[in-house]
Image (cartoon, rainbow, N blue to C red):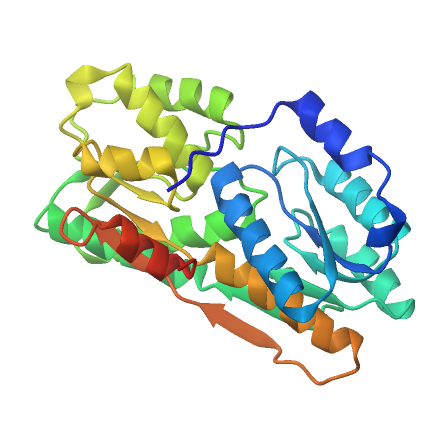
Length: 310
């Protein structure tokens, strides 16, 4: 797996607003939700592969923070201004529905990836997040033999994907006999989330397991636990594949994680938007798989296959 360093806000701001060469004028815009740099990098690679296969151009941009609704709106305006005639979008706010409706009226179709907020989109390509959460809860219960005190480190009440995973996890965990003793929100950025996770975990006695519902919360918790060596025995299940997460699992610092197929989301998102631009009837909903990865099935080549990046 490649290591993808987090870009600074200044660098991303420059990337977003540099003029696009004329050769990119006919394109599909791919606008990510923000956060989760490793996840969205895989989406970008899938989108670029689809563009190559179809002989078209894509412009991939997104805000740094998933809580930055205004920033995502600005990115959408930019890619349309640059001449894109289709949009692949991971919406980070209900406000996007107004913009998607306006784009449809201009003849510009929008395909949602990763989540669905409704509205005038032509297709949705996403993980079944609630079911993925249930799977995590079941695996936690299995690992703890149906007995234990669990901390759920939620991300943000405004992010529907993680909310669905969190609620699914509660169902799966409680259904398996586990007790959820805490479910606080720790935020969308790694720095703040790490501090919040560390504070929460250090203040609770007798923790048997932790669930984190996405890349940023999982990375934040890994870093927080490094500061709390007396909690090294806690069973941690996270979400999304990232080089640090994989390394933590290989080093037995985590029990496992749920992985999605971001490459496939990016690829199918562009391919579906391209079909819609040609006036073709497209599939309204495409569900992508999730898989639980643990110490028994972790293999780097296998992970790449599961992610659809072989």
